[in-house]
Length: 293
Image 1 (cartoon, rainbow, N blue to C red):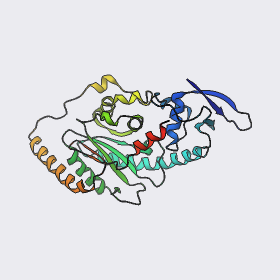
Image 2 (tube, one colour; image 1 turned 180 degrees about the horizontal axis):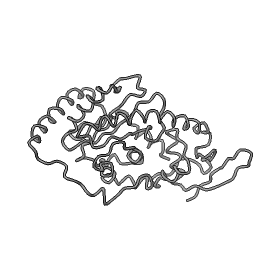
Image 3 (cartoon, helix red, strand yellow; image 1 turned 180 degrees about the vertical axis):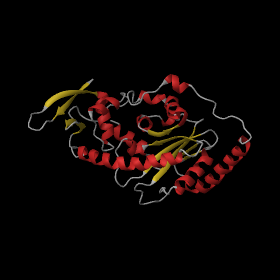
Image 4 (cartoon, rainbow, N blue to C red; image 1 turned 90 degrees about the vertical axis):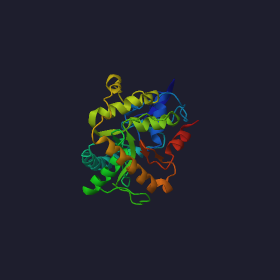
């Protein structure tokens, strides 16, 4: 199904073009994040038609190389500004990720959230997603924080009002538990996964993560390339050694200590032996409600 698109060129009259319904939905979706789309973005982030865009057929404007909703012309300047801000933050994230790679059980470090899209605001923090070796998540979390403190990185703490350029290690997953729960699969979570930007990627962990979550292509079919053959290959995650037993004991202790510290503060956070996901605000439900007709 085609929808109308107004193209505005300085000094010229409007011309009518067409966009697919899935592309209109993509423009509507990214508008919620103040993010106008280039032509390349339109192709990459063409959404499957799971929702009908809650906009009339003439809602989208094309101007100065960007697609956006009528009345949102200011987003073009905002995207340019945030792109420059994001470049600086990405430099910090890259240095922190290389420091984290010194921890043997760190398998992947990736940037998530607005920074992964090059859309970070000046006052925002830096969200990192870490995948660890099997049965080593909570031990690795302790070591990772020690390493980052040793190298002088600022870590965001609960209740921080000033979060600018602070590292927020808000997503941890054990490499043996990478599949996103079915109840949480929707347009929003699929986008959050597809947009992550890996910086450290040991043993092709990023490819394995995408393969385990290839359901995201049902929502954003062009966003990422999922290598079926490479992703299906899985090396043995844990081999027995004389260190295995004491490591498992220490991991249980590390989990218990950290859980006891956090338990009184837990709201929507996911805290298990193989996952630690710190997202106290239900942004996904808000986004999906805004997209509903």
